Length: 134
Length: 134
Image (cartoon, each protein chain N blue to C red):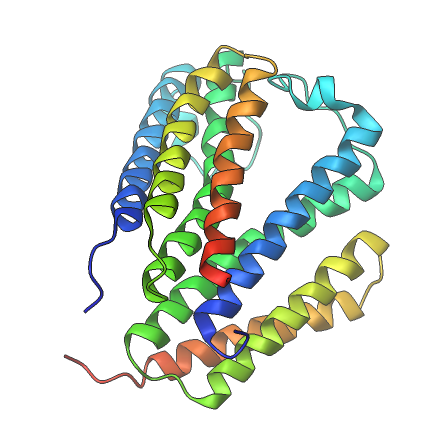
């Protein structure tokens, strides 16, 4: 059995963050559009669009899916290849911190803060993937 | 290093990350970094090639989400064989071809390499199912 590495702990927390982001988006979206629309097959666009802030939470959620699939592979391959070091663990928590900060950065439309925070998480993932490969 | 399924998975994750950077670079040329770093409340069309790259990235994220569990199952189930490594090598090459053909707008061949990558994933799941129950 593979041991639980710090990277896998960070990955679990990142997945929980994603679940939390779901709620952060789904609750206001349901309040704004009404369950009549959200529980329908959504064949048509809603008659009233989402508010700006809720739409931003939706895009933050979508963006985290992309970040999370790369991060998942980085954490799992580092663990399987036995390449976990203090550096890769630091990268994993840098990713997690960046993804937490990304949500308010998107919500408040911070520019270029949101992009810089995204870049921190992306770079941390790249370094982890390189560590897994080299 | 290209003879283990998890390494090939990490390599492909790195390739997708690079595709994301290329996509942002192409979109920066058409709509500019000020728009990209904004909260993007009003959707702007990115232009033909950046939109194709956007769809390439979307498709690649789906491919990663499908292939990663298969690799994890083959690896942790201990059912890896030379053919599963070959399947991952075919997958990576097919997906690199996909990422090149889509922005160039080459039809049929793009669908053919997509199908090759998809079949490689299905093969990995079939092998994963042969893992003994514990």
